Length: 334
Image (cartoon, rainbow, N blue to C red; front, top):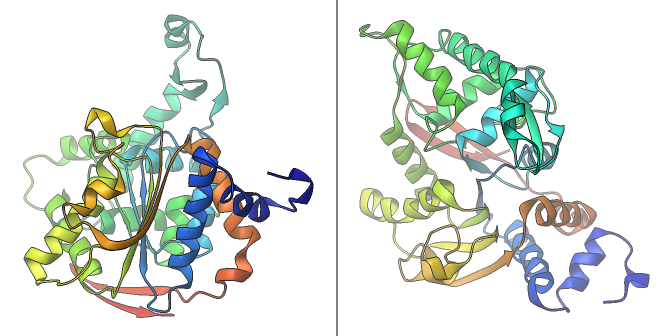
């Protein structure tokens, strides 16, 4: 590693490819992502998000991924998207301390996310705002993709992940949406409308059907996993569902990379290797893949910064256009 020869993040991560341990793995992640971006078969790139990414200061990094066209579909925990909305309506994340007196913080209505504080009263305001906004959504069943697209259109915030996805036409799914503060807002909406036959219903199974169509219509797919959890499992399961529902023949995800701090020997999904997923047919036998055991607050800005620094490699890249009619989609190119 010769830092005197490094002229930016692109050079740094390229140099990482000739080092060792997690630096080499992170450099390999850059290589895998660039391969997916430059593949002539135009893979559909799915981004899975888990962990306190907005609290970690990565909101703009995630927004830029969507805005620059580095990903085509987003699958996220509800918490990441909720904290995006929280900031859109004026909430803030403050630098704190992991050794703070949490009982005192409770008295001050400050919630702690490791070394970051958020405003409990602003959280409540956000929950109630989501409940009220839901009143404007059509009173019928809908997928998380349709509901989150609607939410994104309610905010004129150029820094927002959801608003940018809505503007760019990038589908955003959250298969465990109710396991978040967005779910609290939806519960308030349910309480105000319970017993009514014409109320909004979150249809989680429709999420599956919509994802399966995207996979079935894609000549090749790539997956970017930041953390693990439900988004990783759900995107991988989509390959199995596509085989069952649409008779999709052939490979699993052709490109795959993951940043995680978990490890495989506990048997959990977040730390399971991408090789393990090959046994399920979820990752292609011949997939180009890389896995770096690194904190996303460190690894993701380095990786995305390197992609931007080396944008001459992958620009221009055509955007996918998703034309939804109910739960049916046609996919074209801009």
